[in-house]
Image (cartoon, rainbow, N blue to C red):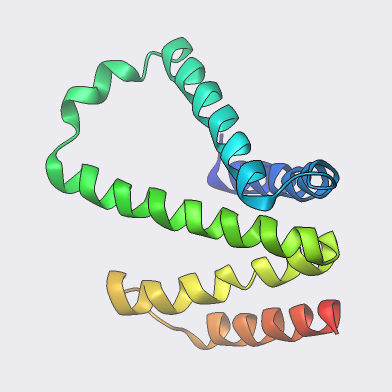
Length: 138
């Protein structure tokens, strides 16, 4: 399966997170809701890893990879804590559109830390993305 199809599937399921999350937050504290969601994700991913036989590759994980993945996990947890807090207080479409500014953040962080190039095309795309988010939320 191509990365484009995988990314589109990711976007679709991210949209479902906003919808189900907004409904599920009606009577719950955002931290508890995020914790429950993360527990379900953890259980689902453990089962999925067993069925796809990916746990056999656990020996390939070194300390550096584990540390970087731990940072990614903390970043993801903080992202979801803030996302669910925003979702509780704001409209799902507005929160989701502001959350997509992560694309712009990724662009600039990838330039700084991964050595990716900023082209005129990606710069214009980022400007349009920011403009679209502003139109969506204002």
